[in-house]
Length: 90
Image (cartoon, rainbow, N blue to C red):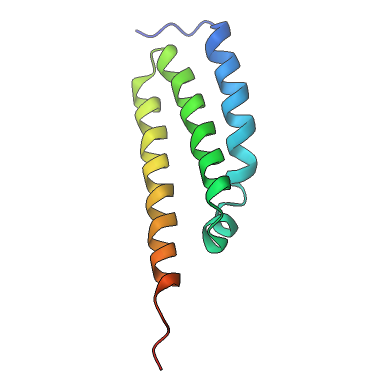
């Protein structure tokens, strides 16, 4: 069973990762619509750092869930960007 005690490094990773990711996540629809690549990279970095904190605590399933969220956000960003790049049909 996983250790539920506080691990100082994982806690630091949570604080840093979520502090970076949550503000961007709250504006993710606008980030995607405007194709702000730097904001997406900040979001991805924050989620990855937080995910590493979960991995350090032995919570592999939560780690994988974070990775899937990153893939989903990247796919949404990419698909939306391709749609906007297409010329409008007349």
